[in-house]
Image 1: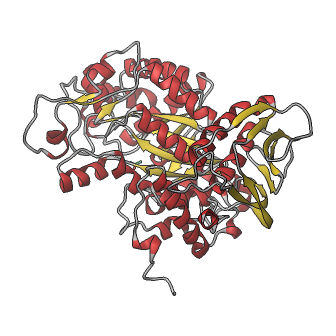
Image 2: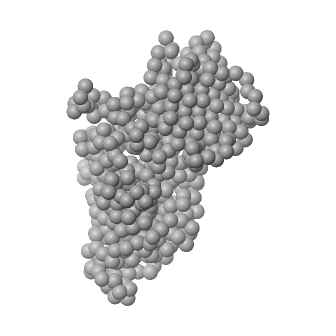
Image 3: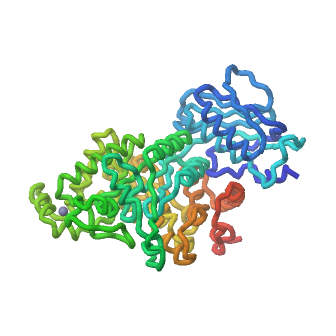
Length: 532
Ligand code: ACM
Ligand code: ZN
């Protein structure tokens, strides 16, 4: 009986701010028309695509021309801006006659559509389009808006390259759970993934490692294979547009002054020693950008000019984490810089480096983001700090008036094992540190789950002898990302682990029907520490 497929009718994640189940159900026998105001047609088309996949019947999209509507339609309508809905909120009403989604922005309308899409829970064997069986969803009234403006996931495409379709698949999955930032880790010691026209060796040399096994794990064989890949500028423009249509801003990360061996392999003159270098095989390399060489800043300025042209994001992430200072200590140019600028030591040289980059980023009309190391030694006030070594960096940064993104490894690192980071622990995360003075709380923009691929791909390779497929990334991300999605979106008082656990079951089922692998971990499905 089809109706049973919808028993868990309001298993929506993230949990809406206000959600009232009403009597009755809307019954969809044939295909339906989506009627969208002209400015929301693209959103309507995306909804039609999604619902066609779920219901296996055709959906048409028409422009909403007047206030009347025939039975059974979905209406997407613009409403006046209001504090109630904010920039990304929506109202969703399902009655026995049809569906209305109202929002003051395309983002809000898109999120109303994501809620509706989850209400149309997929079934393994949908009734055929010509069958008499109706597709039904519950009558419901929802008013919803996010708690935080920044709801992100970081994807590491430097340690391990994902093709364009895989990246777009993750954008879809993020958007489905109302996440709006893809922080894209595009460069590191192990690979440079973004085509830069002015410096072609960055991808000719920096995108390829000699051998996947030897590189990660020093396994024998296939030393003549090269492993890697990069995104052409055309690819990037397409991915950015794909994300924008789904209210996802892609925040590119170009790592500096450390974590940049792939860049140095391509252009060794940017290092302190002159090289030569090969791409990374393990972790943390001593060779970093020479902070004493003005050519390094010109080079990075050129790179960021192209990056800013490709990514309209208001923010550019420059990494800034884990930069060893040993080469700087030995380098005459770095010494001269320390002298000339009156810096105390190499730690202040790192601060000088990031401050100079902040000026370069700001000259392009963007704002700099860096990992919490960038706080050390002072920082441009407009810089945003991403707290990863616990929450103290985020707390200090917010107190100092910086915007912050919270992604402490303890709760947000999706590459950690489930033993180390249970879904319940991610779900328990409160992004506003309790010690933070209330007048500083608005500096906490939100949260990010970080999907690093170094350790995960190494663990996977050790276990299987194979390079990580998408399914291996999926099980790290899901279900923990659902927990973080709710932390980022839902009102604090609406969060309830037991209730969430029930909804995760339904979402896992929906995800698996979409071909997503979900970890069936005891911490979600049968938590041994929970009272029954
Ligand atoms: C980091 O995990 N090194 C930011
Ligand atoms: Zn140097």
